[in-house]
Image 1: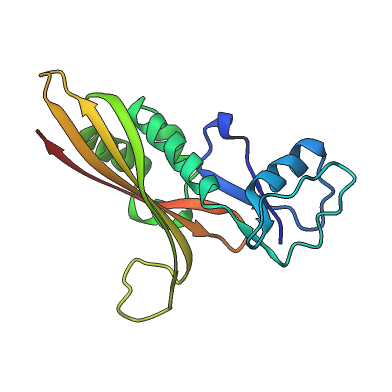
Image 2 (image 1 turned 135 degrees about the vertical axis):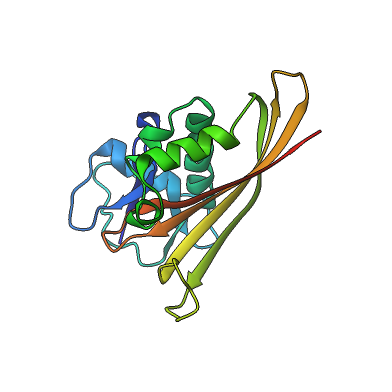
Length: 185
């Protein structure tokens, strides 16, 4: 399966989509090459004539998830939570209505972002167990961000944002959870 980044400038909450069986253009091939590389090697150079069907030995770069997480965090801080919700995983939509998701983010995100940096990127497999209430079994990637914001009262606010992406059966990676913890200093 090949995974190509969706256009990041569109504000999508999806990290990628399955391109198996499609013949991507030069632009999609470059996106795939930027995200995937043979294990232990730098991304391979590809052009429109390169076959992308032989990718069993390739992996998805954590940078792809970090880039999308940064974009989603920026959109949320800019008050675009509704647009984010429109493209999230059914897992998140089962837990929140659109209005509840937007209200939750508006409540937790305040101040002008001064700095945003990554804390962690991890990949986990969740087994289907009776104790995993509200958590779908499958593959997840979690991106932790550390955000410094300046409040209207001129106090600094430090918040951690953890964005979890779920690998859908369609091949797409969609935002499945968005946790925000903040501390005023």
